[in-house]
Length: 223
Image 1 (cartoon, rainbow, N blue to C red):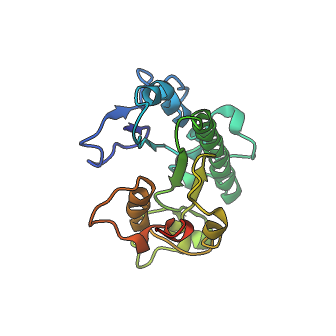
Image 2 (image 1 turned 90 degrees about the vertical axis):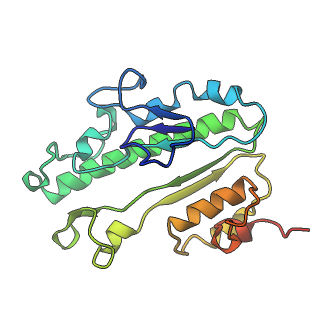
């Protein structure tokens, strides 16, 4: 299932259940805009309706999408001040822009924590895991650049280097965390996501390339 609080799936979810959470009609957590954590509403019911087999849930969040960083988080997450309150970044200082962006990061941290909380509740019945990955980085004034979208050939590393996070529940015992930690400073690309998901779900297909699976070396040798 694909739940979306951003800009649609661009056709990726055309053959699976797609739910739009950009409206108060479906998203119960909305103020000046609908919040990412609203995508968690009713998710337990969906999980309970699939007691057996594998479940892949994609949560396409709004996250830190600029330039209106100040709109990306509820008021209680405005911890860093002063903040830029304008979509025209030229009207703000670099400090104000960075503060608004960091506040949005705090809200993403909160969102991920809520997901992990939900996954922990399902530990007794499933091998639960979370794979979070951003779509792009962001320039926040380095060398006078802001936002993202420069061609890859000239884009600075701040726009290309993205965060990724993996979390595994207590029943996910076939991953050696120490081996995974050794890969912390290794660079991967979005191309690794496809093969890593195939590996997590143990899908057997000729399309799977184990050398592209981030977790392959962290699994015990196959007998």
